[in-house]
Length: 375
Image 1 (spheres, rainbow, N blue to C red):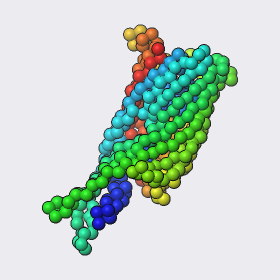
Image 2: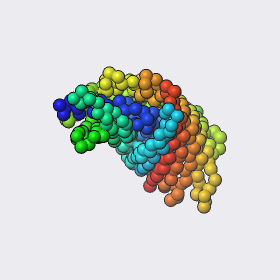
Image 3: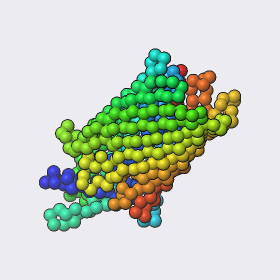
Image 4: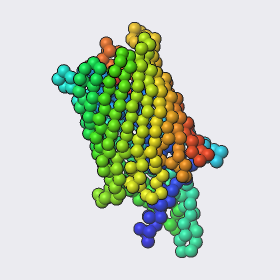
């Protein structure tokens, strides 16, 4: 009997209403963070292919110089409007940590840890179950804390001032820790039911990328990720099996205007390869991202040079809601200040996203603060 009730509890929690879950953007296996550094986030991800601090294109690593260390935090504030009322949630993320060093005169070795998909939410709503032929009122609550992370080991080689390329191995790991509970209003007669579930993820992938300057002031960057097998485990037992999403991206940048860098980027990710990791009802599809941005020399602060960044992005999120695709439009602004004789930089960016699906709307505001050290 207890096992049956716990199973019902799990089903109820997984079907938590959007108003309780509080987010349109974290359906399925979670929200795709984009794996962009704070600098790239200031251009809405447009700089992601050519930025050595973003673990996207391994061929961009030599652009870091002698060595690289980046760390950032990205809290997000969300508001969803459902049935005429607003639901507010906050999520704290630490999406990118990168370290790397030059090897020899032309090589560069780097390691990064980044968030591929973030899934953190809380749900609480009223429900009733049949016990002995009577309907008994209760409250169902669910707390989910988890993410799928990408640990990347990359090596790049600078062939010349106009060409650099790299390869990388990715280990995808993570877990979703779910705390499910049903509390009956008549607590004197019925005890509370609770269960803790941990789903662990594991997978691998390889990637390669290149950055080339075919003509002065024009740079082309491109990268490809090929995903291997991915699986989920429940209590150390294999639960489901799927594949890591393949990804293909490219960007073109122009620095012919003094003090400015203009970038256009396109990215396509085959999220549908993850479909068999979930239930038959999982609504997942491939997604294409288009972004444009600019990095402009800003004013000096106490003699320190700064940069001003602007960007815009449009994309669909990989996991839909109620059979409809979740679309996202983002505007971004950012700044960066170099200090310690150019060996370090403090970057700040602000992204404002509008997400829509099936008549619902969500507003997300992501504040990113990153520290980069290049000793």
